[in-house]
Length: 578
Image (tube, rainbow, N blue to C red; front, side, top):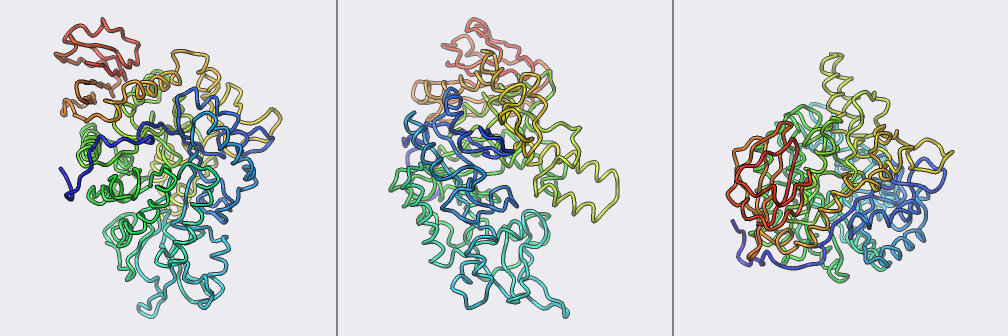
């Protein structure tokens, strides 16, 4: 499949294609001070650990001043550092230390919206004549049957209307997330100039690029049409998911990034049109390097959205992975590979089995599954240890995620049905963003902060006491940590095929085994992953010609594969050079 006529070769080389990224959620990573949240000095103290994994790029979630309504994604100042994390000199030192090790630093760029505590918005609210008024999206409401209504029916991603009424100026402002996160008006050239200045400020200090938060939402149709009311969530996203001027704005951002040979990845929810995606990521377009899409991570979202139940099927998983892998290769695009991040639950729970019997094998299998695909690989803190979701025994008082809490409050306002409430609680344990935000387990004692410190802002996952912690895993050559290190090493050693090769799905019908091949020139790698908790038999003629065992979750030797029929243990995986 191809789109447009000028297709770049899939083998286009770039340093960021051959890099692996480690994502840090600063509040939950590490602190050297007696504080309940992580700090930049805490991050710096763990660079050797991160480097030993084989990481090339460190990505920090927001470290800027913020009221914390959405845990830092409501920014009130883009040019300073929130004192809870440190100061700008800490960033400079972190950049220096990373660059000394030939590693790079990437920051979060959150510019679809700001905090309502940002000076721009404070000025914007003062009146219609204020010079910052047009920096945000303000519109008059509608009168329907004598009642004031918002300008359209768009809904916010965390619930409720996407419009908030301001009594003082008698207009509504747009917020696609919380009321504390007003959307910037990218139609205003002054807004775009300000964003460009922010980028140059950090790039000039030595930052190596950005992850761009919900960057596809920055362009809205100026007539603001109603969304499809039949949609159960994100009403209106069909209009702003890929707005009329999106690619124009992205090219402007891309031109700045190219000046610095900087890395970038755009978060693009609510976009499944690959024709639009390739316009954003194809090399000759000059927009983004790659995007985070959500098709894989929405696989278990039910008909009423994220917190409604749905069991994913292997056929759907294969279809999604094959679609993105083959399309990007055929059209000169590039994938961002991720199973976890700060907004997603732990992959062992979502895609495999988190029971004590199978959690370790599951984590290694998933590392093989994603780590041998084509794209830039992202690992989220704790994923390299096999950290799992919060325990099912935790009550609602442990949850901090505004998305989860808004849903819970809304549901309780609608019903007292114990069954419905119980189902919702089960879904929070499976999908809440809090699953990714428990403090990083450094030791069996915790290790997040010095002894005698206040309790961390969020409760520590108890599995750190039974071996799921960095100290124990670094001391164990059979740990999930060292398996992940072997995956990253394999991507470097076999980069021609594992990074730049094509993708071929194998055995589409098998309900338990996900198998695929990677090929480049004369190189060929077979990847086989058992997603089931029962042993499965796998047959392939080429096992007789195995040249090298690249990866094996169960430490199989080359001689094991010298036959046509192999039994995979539960959650076993391997990658073989044929």
